[in-house]
Image 1 (tube, rainbow, N blue to C red):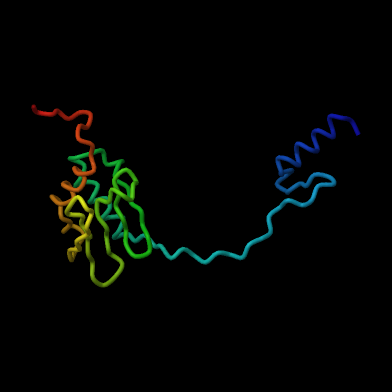
Image 2: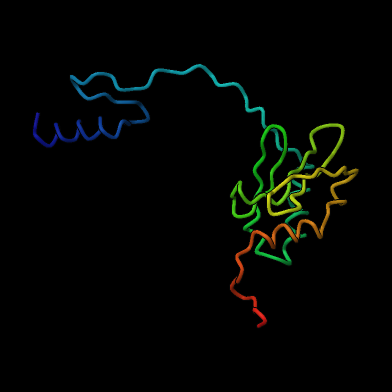
Length: 148
């Protein structure tokens, strides 16, 4: 075997693929991970109602900030809408998975959540959402003028 063939074989072993098959280095212990049992399906289910409500929240706060800064993070018990994908800057929480639909709003600086009942996602509290997003913004945002 030539030296280039040895290097080629070792390189293929390091890369770990040859024709779609795993390759082990000659004389090296098998480093492939042990197969793991199939994980249970995720318990988080994002519904169309949650997606629609998230888009409505984005439209409402578009007058205050770039909508790309408002993101959705769905968890098992609620759908969180966050500013800058930061869980310390919640915009609202959407509780749309049960019989009783609610929106959780953060009305003060301490981020205390107050829940309000909804019969439709179009009933979202527009002014409260705008105020919450304004609170997340830095004091002087580029593009805004500060009056002295």
